Length: 233
Image (cartoon, rainbow, N blue to C red; front, side, top):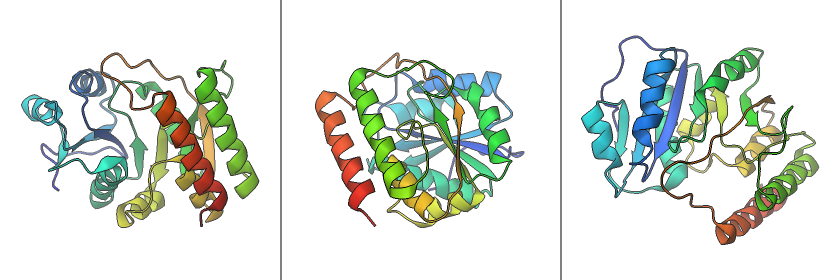
């Protein structure tokens, strides 16, 4: 799918913003980027929304890739990375459309990536107090320990979705549809030789809409990630 309203001059950094039903959040997220962080480019990948998120993006003239139906996060992100690869961005950032990810940390992530890292992840645990609920904190800890056991790498916050990928990783995600933007993929990439670093971040609370992660789905997610990390290829 081709993106609408492509900018003529581009940044080295592209924010890939998957958006399903984010009608209550997407304007606030994108307008802040446009007004306060013009040094970064963005593309909103609308994933067959049912709440008019795609219509809002079109009306506001946002840079978008519109998927005709809901394809899920993995294929939504895959399409965003295809756009990043096609446009030859140096870095792509996995950036939520709900307002929880904060753009003020992207410059620090880029500085770290410029040191030669393939993936730079945000961490809510480096130099900051615990920002998680007990359940999510437990899940993150178990996933962190599984990654350490399987790869030997120390990743303090594997469930933080704010991640920056270099050009090599962009091409990989663009070419393959089996790589989800999830902790088990991070573990697979580390085992394949990817160099990973972290920078301290804070995340904001969702203001509008509901997260798909309730207690039941969070437990199911944790079990799936642990099984994939420990027993997957």
